[in-house]
Image (cartoon, rainbow, N blue to C red; front, side, top):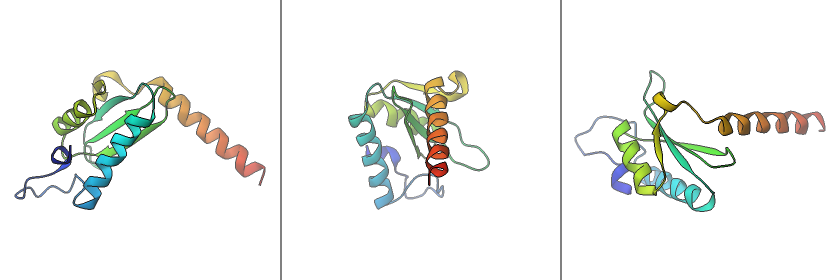
Length: 115
């Protein structure tokens, strides 16, 4: 998997993590898939502010995101993790992710109100 998040020495792109960051990103993605149920991957295209990314979403809606050098690598990473993979441009984001985000915001508001 390390090679999937890597770059060739001649590449000038800084989109992918390097060195220890690359190993940490790979380990994080593997751990997320291992420790959660029903994980699916969504490949996000680059835009003016961020490089291409792989977004992993569990059945609960909990999610994590890591940078990849390009979209093709994102699909390769997801496949190597053994999870279904989708192009977010065509599928959009799953409702369970939006629901999880809303619940997390509400919990933070409740937590700060009781402090």
